[in-house]
Amino acid sequence: MLFNSFTFALFLPLVFLLHWYVFSGNHKRQNLILLISSYLFYGWWDYRFLSLIVISSLSDYIIALKLGQTSKPQHRKILLGASLLVNLGILGFFKYYNFFIDTVVESFGHFGIQVNLYSLYVILPVGISFYTFQTLSYTLDVYRRTISPTKDLLSFMAYVSFFPQLVAGPIERASTLLPQFKKARAFEFEKGKEGIKLVIWGLFKKVVIADQCAIFVNEIFAAPGEYPGSMLFLGAIFFAFQIYGDFSGYSDVAIGTAKLFGIDLMRNFRYPYFARDIAEFWRRWHISLSSWFRDYLYIPLGGSRVGTLGRIRNVIIIFTVSGAWHGANWTFIVWGFLHGLYYIPLLLSQSTRVHLDEVGHQRLLPSGKEFLQMAVTFLLVSFAFIFFRSESLYSAGFFIKAMVSFDSWAFPGWRMLYMLGWIVLLVAIEWLNRDKLHPFNFDHRPFFMKYCIYGMVSYLIVAFSYNGQQFIYFQF
Image (tube, rainbow, N blue to C red):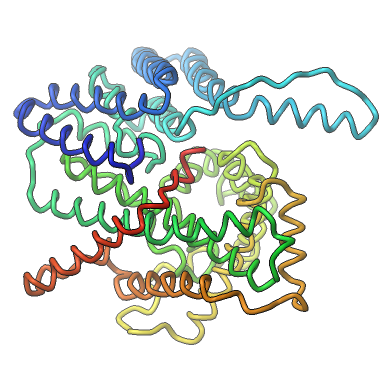
């Protein structure tokens, strides 16, 4: 079920009414309706894969209880290993089995050795990487004794499957989200109003920006040899804004929808294209995944407590694994590896935490230095995204070669300039509201002005919805 679909437009009000009016006053009944609704929401794609969510949820629930009942280090390691085996085993089979088989066959083929391994017709379940990491983090936290295991199965199942963030995050931690399901919730008008604003803004980024960029991106990346370098360059820029509008738009709708049910989710994006270096970019982009890898992979590897070579190794590992998390293709792995390379100069110069303040703080425009830093960072990110979007390393290389052939540059056409105008509008709006959660912060404005803006944005969402696209991160 897509957030930008008519089905969801009917589904959300119905669940809202059931949650607050039919099952109000009892959080267990509210959790039950959220659990049923979440399974319906997910099963709308393919009900067969609901079994994977149930298996992942029940296994980590039981393992965590067992972890809470034993203090023997060996037993605890065995239990943690069981959780890793179940979660990563399911993820590995459905997401990486064919990639592994094809890689082995091709590798031996380069040496003239024929290996008879066969791929399977494996369908990738929607959102498997997200809910797998969410349940796994719960077991890891219980193993580390940072949280206690819960005995409330219903709350735990609702925590794992909560439909706003089930298929594309944010990847929530049990320490912050699970307690919200274990207590009574009362509807808060201001929180609900904030939620609706986030839903509207998220849909604007998805439908008006991302889906319109997708028209050009799909055409250009499908046949890069047919376009001049200038259009390829804009195609890379458009994809950077497509994936940003698509994914941050999803996150905003998810966070806003959760607020309608009295649930607070973590912020997943903080205007990442205003970052002044790669380290700041990753503190602003897909924050829930970045922090997950930091806490559960980078720090256990030694983090920054090891020597220089150890820190470089750890950075390359987490970024490469992050790339592999995104998809079973060498293009994603190269994308992650590139970001690791981008990060190393900052690591060596001890500059990873230089830009912790808000860019252009209390100024209308950034300084010349800040503008240059943001431009360079954005271009580096956009270049890496060419690999993210391409079907293969060969096609990515062909795209880049054609793009930098400046003798083939030409006027990109008015259609692309029109789309570029929408992107400039988005950047301007976000820049003026870069210290806020969303741009709809004008409650002090006259009633007529406020609702004219809401109405205009809503009209644009409906008017541009003819090109409805599936969210990019559903495939991860």
